[in-house]
Length: 307
Ligand code: HSE
Image 1: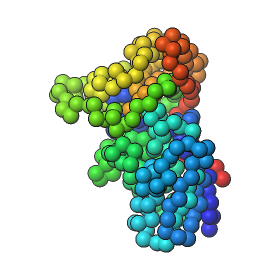
Image 2 (image 1 turned 90 degrees about the horizontal axis):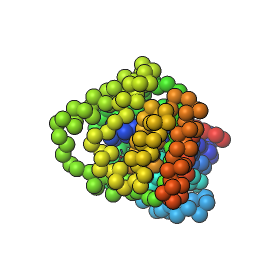
Image 3 (image 1 turned 90 degrees about the vertical axis):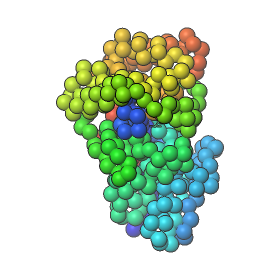
Image 4 (image 1 turned 120 degrees about the horizontal axis):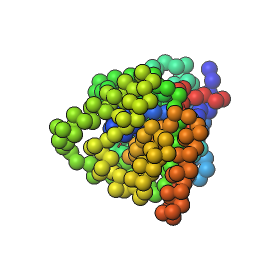
């Protein structure tokens, strides 16, 4: 049996604007690279390859915690040594913690002869999200493992649905500020008005139908969030300008990626996605805030074994 594997663990966009904690999509860029070795001793060892300050205690590491759960469930004398090349910046809103958790579970499963289903892997990977944000949510780990767009209809019991979607382009701007998911959840109101809930679930259903029917206008109309975005967007300088100017430039729509500060926009083709990138750059150049941008596409494969 193979003793060592290398995986590409992709970034993800959680929420997809209207679907807080229930919708997410997988990206072709950015990616973490992870090497995982099977050990014959019950332990999990974590290394950060590029000196990035990741927790070395496996119980506090988003890649370590899921594998501890996996080993405990198997109740065998096995362990894993994980080396993480962290390219997706923690606190970016691009599913950094989820990439570590999902990458570790897919790699470990591969070394064990693929004994677990993708749903099992999401169940383990959610322990990583609990370490990162204090709450189990699957809208990053599910798309990271399944690829494409996923709906998490329920986490108790786990019910994940892959949603077919058109080959859209995704433009992302990551302004260089850090927003911790735990903080971005803390500031949310615990109650919503019925009129807002009605608007929100109309949008979620519209977005899913738009993806499935290849209806780009419906996708654009449904990328609206009346509950979370008004609260969280105040943490992101330039958010309103990015949103309105990117739509004027031809983007279908978009909003906060996960809990931010990254902002994503969907476009029907590469040319539009690149115009949208230019709009984002101009806004942050004017504000004077450093940023990274990505023009990428929806990754329909999820975590990939590369060696
Ligand atoms: N659904 C989560 C949130 C995603 O918005 O808090 C965090 O990446």
